[in-house]
Amino acid sequence: MNVVTANENKAIIDRLTIDIIKRIDGQFELRELLSQFVNMYFNKMIIDITSIKDYENIEVIRKLSRAIDPNRVILLLGDNMTVNSSVYQSQLVEIGFYNFTRNFEGLMFLYDKPNTKEDVNHFLLTEEKKTELENLSIEPQVNIHETNERKIIGLENLTLHAGASSLTNMMVRQLNNKGYQAIGVEMFKQDLIFYHESSLHACMNKNDLERLLREQSGAEVVIIDVNEFGEAEKFCDEILYLVEPSYVKMTKLLKKNKNAFLDHKGDTIVLNMSFVSDNEVGDFEYETKCKVFANIPPLNDRDKDLKEINELLQKLGFLRVSSE
Image (cartoon, rainbow, N blue to C red; front, side, top):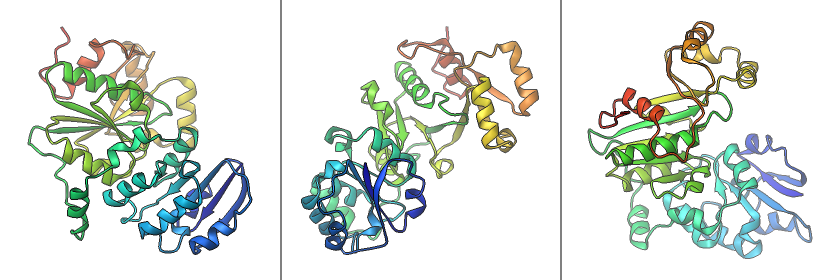
């Protein structure tokens, strides 16, 4: 059973379907808030950080860590710029809070797969860097295209579980094998860490992504599994919308939004994990009124040189890649 607090991020908390034994709404002094849960056994405490008065003061959150084991806490940060800054999140990790996110998807991911210290080490800043950022009124603006050659490509699952994470891994690996400097990024989730590749990264918010792009200035290609990142178009040169064209996945998509394909008419559609033959692609295009950019069958993501991935990369303009 779990306990939760809600305030400015109430709309996100309202979406939770986990077992909840107690919920507190509103904003409270930390001591007052904690008193509501005295002598109560719970599995996880999900805290809308805006429920705590003076939450932007990291010392208040430090007091929270002394009162409750941070490993049992998930902090919902929402869109507040201060708590989503690199400095604040570095301090959260130093205090011992490894599980924090700004949205519902991140909340549910961390509930099922809590972070360890190793998962969030990348948030840590040196004292020199923290001082530099604290002396600025805003964090430095990132030039996401450090060079004219850098290309940023987003992958977004249009149907559920259409394989964006594994496709990101395969594209990055083959780009690096063909002489490009490429990195992969996953927004709001951390599935890519299971590949144990130094070129793959997880980012939980926009500031984290901007920081990574600054640090990885030598990367010629960035592949981003954007999930539901609302600002993806600001970062990406192109977004590939992935469709697993099975009957079940297509039906679920259209039940959720009958205009799903009309909404993406003109976008770059990729059939992924597809059993549709090349001869049948025309039928798919006729039915959905969408042009198919590539048709990729189920692949073994352990293979290091996949013909289908090379062909996709060539279509995207990576001329050093050869399928021969």
